[in-house]
Length: 324
Image (cartoon, rainbow, N blue to C red; front, side, top):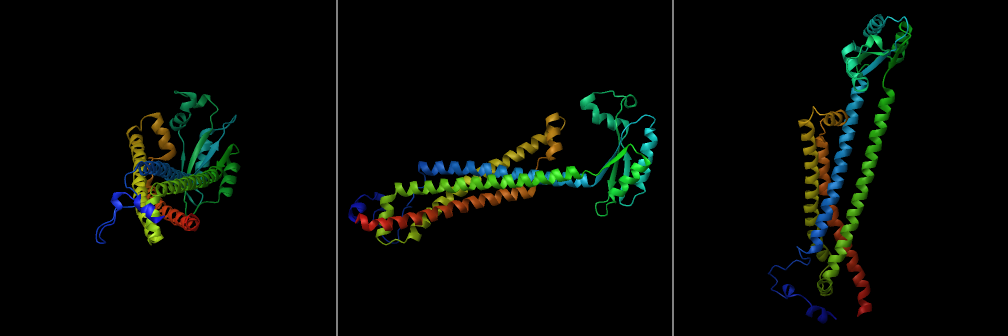
């Protein structure tokens, strides 16, 4: 049986002097290899986008949480007979006299009009509209005030006033960040599983295409670790090349999007993106995550290929007595 297999060997694996360099078992430039490289690049691109998006949303949520935690607002609802200017001064004085408050600023008519302009248009006369007025209070994050006592003091002085410490928003932001991270981890896990399965099928296909060579090497005494190492080196190279390509394209997408946002800050679209995600920069954490992902996919590709080869060789050993 071995003689028949040896006769089918290609000329590139003919017996040579021991000192000569042997040709690789797996052809380096076959169609299956190029297809696998493309698939790995696409998988890495999607995974890198996931890592970058999770990092971006997580960092942005942390910034929102920090900004919200530094400020509280007091809303004064207009009421018949209420001296709005006097009420605003009273709230401001009470806030400034509270320990843990850094400043208390009344939002003037111009700022209030800008807030309402997208809904009510320009040229608003706030004296003719029942528009609530706001007092923005900056607090000391290291030593915040007693919000319950502050709210009670403000309500006692101005019954139409209410203190908003943004706890509901903070809770929603934290929940959103956690949900985003969990979703990103799930997507990343699915992409890695799909990559592993792709490598398994590609390795089996490569072994099938070179089965006669592998069987000869295996039956004449070549260790399974030697054959597995050949496949491992081949697929490690493919995995790293594909992962580098996909990761580089993903980083380029984030970079170009950030540049576009910075160059179009005056447009409504860019303003909305900046309000949600800041400068749309994933930072060093995102870049480090993408680089770690590239290495992980390369190593995962090589290890998956090695395990697949060893298992296939074990199956050949089980079938060889029957075939003989």
